[in-house]
Length: 210
Ligand code: PRP
Image 1 (spheres, rainbow, N blue to C red):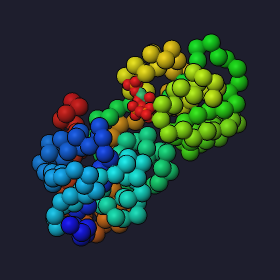
Image 2: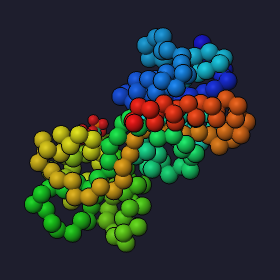
Image 3: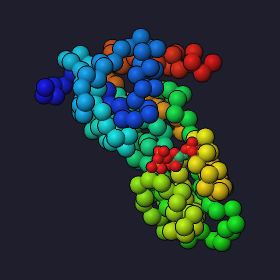
């Protein structure tokens, strides 16, 4: 099957957030086309197509107009630095981006490891602080444990990983949850399709959280 531009193209992150995104759209009365096979890159028809992406790629596909809308964590959006219209807080995937250290370590922070290097640099600049930022791709807490870095900036959800590692959350730098993001041109060109979707997702998120 080749990728034909469907009426509405939706970019979703693979993994945990995908099921919640499907459920949120269904609650809003907007059924997304179901995945049909293994290792599919996208699925759907001429009306609606779903692109299955790594979370960090969702803002790129929406900003460059390949997808009209997407679902992504605010943490990922902050790291992307892209200026996207973000009209709905979908409520799920709540977590925080925090500065994390070893409890016995109070030396000045010279090096920070993170999966969020741009966000971390921006935070340092805002505070007037200077430190090296090292990009890592996973298991970031280990960097603080073994001394690769004096601190890490990472996602805290339940706090279980920190507890198990004996690390402490020194400061919450940002709060995150899943957001609907929308391409700004699509919002104008497909307003009859997109505004009702935004309104219904907003209403469904309000009902679920309230
Ligand atoms: C994330 C994050 C933390 C952990 C936080 O990692 O980087 O390590 O979850 O969750 P918790 O507070 O509920 O313990 P993820 O599972 O995405 O894998 P990764 O470490 O390989 O990035």
